[in-house]
Length: 333
Ligand code: SD4
Image (cartoon, rainbow, N blue to C red; front, side):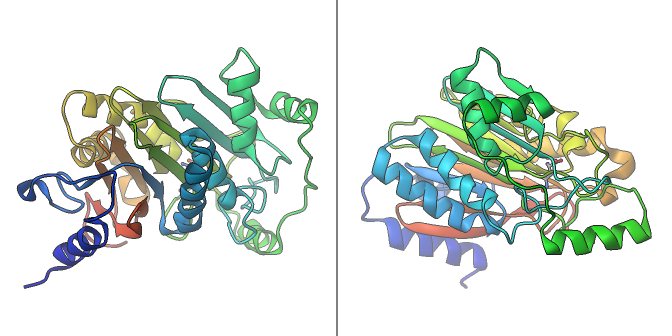
């Protein structure tokens, strides 16, 4: 019988079997989205099906420049510039004062990294994060300092006008005035992207407008190296999405990479990190969504979430696939 799992696995394999650069594991190890997966190099994986255009762009850039770092930066810039996105970039939902503040990070597999948090008016916070990495002796710049650095670097400042959809949602929220941060399937799209090239060199990015209606000044996991993003050429890479506070508490992305270092597959590492996250956040776990995606240097991948509804996109020489992640809890809320 053709199960969905087999169908996806077979469709990927048949479309990629003849392409160079694709490493196939033994048939006994081919379990799609479970303990181990097929391995592909180059490979990009990004959070949420929304990332499909971002991955396509990343793939194009890698083909053109050969740079995995350029690829993961240019990829997520597609989401940052998308006026339809309510949770990435300047068109996103504001905080509870009605101001959009952005968090982003970038990391190379050799350990170089940069990030910005609580920054306003910058269309491409991931590019600013890269500038922090490449042009300063620091890793992280926050708030007005980050904005001033962007101006000094010649980055244009965007007008602070809420996107009409974001304004409408904010006004509705103001009326209900209930401050209870919940990330569920309607409130996502933070994009985290991790990629590995043909030679096993890795890089990753993560960018978000964060939690809708957060307290002014609140910073999530996305710009925190080790929480929202971690990349190590010796092992693999991971990125996170969902309720940042739960992810920060377990140094989530670093944990996933360290679990892979100890021999776990990307899938197993994501599953173990989610069970750790649940243990540390038991009280509110019903209302908390969080998910991880990971790749290792062989080009295997995995993804897992607390609740159903999380999906991710893989992109390799055979094309793009949307994968519904498995989750710890099985019933949709
Ligand atoms: C945050 N992790 O700011 C981000 C939000 C997110 O899907 O990922 N939403 O906590």
